[in-house]
Amino acid sequence: MGNYNRMKNENQNPQEESKTVIREIIKETVYIKQPDNKYDRLGCWMWGLCILIPILGLILYFIWKEEYPEKAKSVVKAAIIGFSINLILIMFEC
Picture 1 (cartoon, helix red, strand yellow):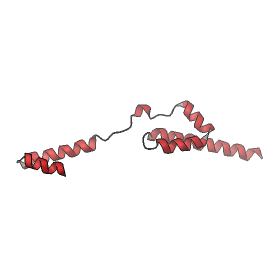
Picture 2 (cartoon, one colour):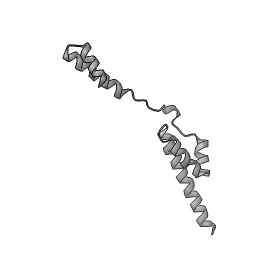
Picture 3 (tube, one colour):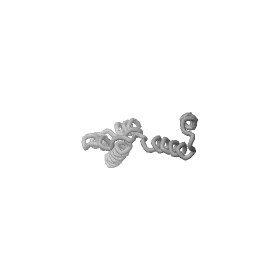
């Protein structure tokens, strides 16, 4: 609230003061940085690699979950598919 005290000293009009405070709050809440959706998609090569090596998908999930949430979800789906395929192959091998 340090900005509020500074604005209070500069503006004597209470209505202008409240408008300025509201504008500052809106600026802080609206301009939260979001990840660029252009790079938040998983390519087909990475999808296939995560199916073949599921542990890689789990590692990449924990690396990407904050910065690229959609990519992280896709990697986990591919890893689950890979684990399922490996489990089925192991069960029918016996």
